[in-house]
Image 1 (cartoon, rainbow, N blue to C red):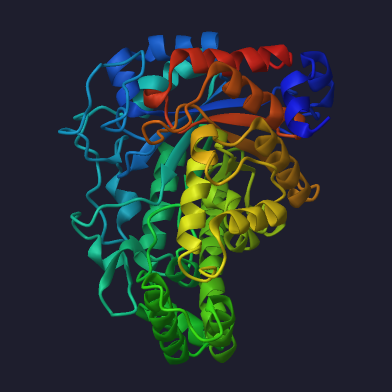
Image 2 (image 1 turned 180 degrees about the horizontal axis):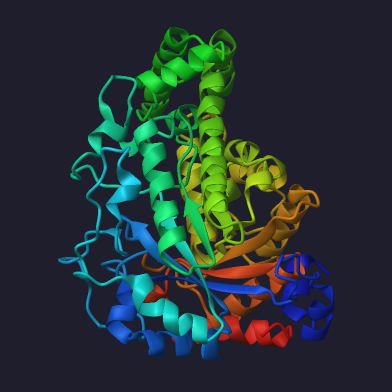
Length: 490
C-alpha cells in the first residue's frame, strides 16, 4: 500500500500510536495546535467569539497573532477577488488595508534606526495584544507574536534600509547587513518581549539570494533582474570573506545576459544547462554571493533569538520557512535545518498541500524558462519529484488536484530527520483555504483532515493552521480540530 492510501485509510488509533512524544520544554505532552490570525478578525468578530471558534472548532491551543506586516498574506480580510469566508464582515478591506504594527510602539526601542513611524493606521489605536491577551491567558491559550519581512516603499525612513540592486538603484527589500534594519528588528522583538505577557515570537522572510532570483527559481513572479544586495555593508562583508564584489558584479551581468536570451528562446550552442555551468565556473563568485546572503539571513535569526532570550529566556523563538523549500532543490539546499536549529526553539515549515500543485506548476514554468529550458515541462517535473521525493500527479493535473496528504507526510518526516535529534520543535504549516486561481484545487474537509493526520504521523510536534483565519472556512477548521481529537491530542 502506498503512503497516500495509508494516510487516507489508516485508523486514528494507529496514527495516534505513531505520534512521537512531545519535545516541548514545558514538561507537558500537549502538542501545539496553532492558528495564524490577524488583528482585523478580532475587531470584526470580537475577541471572545474568535477564541470560542478556535478552541471549540479547531482544538487550537496557540495563537500566532500577526503583529506586524505590510502584506496581505497574514493580515487584513480576505484577499480581494477570492470568495469571502462564512464568518467575519462580508466585505473586502481594499480601501482601508495599509499594514504596519498592530500593537503600541515604544519609541525608546527604535533610537538606532531611521525607520520609526510604522504603527498600522487601519484599525485606529487598536492594540491587538492588549485586546486579546487577557482572554487568551484565562483560557490557557499561548500567544506568539508573528511578523514578516514585508514592507512598503512609501514609508518614512525606509529608504535608508533598502537593499541595493546591481544597477545601484534601491530595491523594495531591506538589507540584513544594514545596521539600521538589524536594529529595527531587534527593537521590535524587545518591545513585544518587554511590554506584553506573550509566549514567543515567530518571524518569516520569504526571500532568497541573487543567484536564485536571477534564474527565477521560485514559485512566485520570476525576478530575472532582481540582484541584491550590493550596498556598502554587503560589499564590505564580501571583501572580509575574500569575495571580490567586482567579480561578482561581472558574473551577474553575464548571468543576466544568459537569462534574457533564454527568455527570448535564444538557445546557446551548448544548450542552457551547460552554458549556465560555464558561467558559474568562470564566476564562482555567483555562488559565493548567494551564500553570503543566506548566511546573513541565518545571522539575523541568531541576533533575534539572542535578543529575545536576553530579555526573557522562557520565550519561544522560531521561524517561518518559505514554501519555496518544497519546490526548489536549490533553495532547499540553503535550508540546512541542523544549522538553523541552534537558534530555533521551533520551525514552522510551510507544507501547504492544496495550493502546492498550483505553485509547483508555476515554479516549473519559471525554472523551465532559464537553466532548464532544454527540458520539457513534464520531464522537468518528474526530475523534481525524484530529487524531492514526491509522488504526485502530472504537470497538467496538479493545479487542479493540489498535492496529497502524502506530500505533507514525506515533508514532515524529512524535516524531522533533517533536525537530526535537536531540541527544535517541528510545526508543519497546514493549508486552510489559501487562495488559488479560479477552477484550481480548493480545500475540502477531508483534505484538511488528511493533511493534519499526515503531519502528526510524519513526526510533527504540532501543526500551524495557515495562512490567516480571515480566509478560512469554518468547516475546514472543524476538520482540522476533528483530526486533532481523533488522535487524542485535544
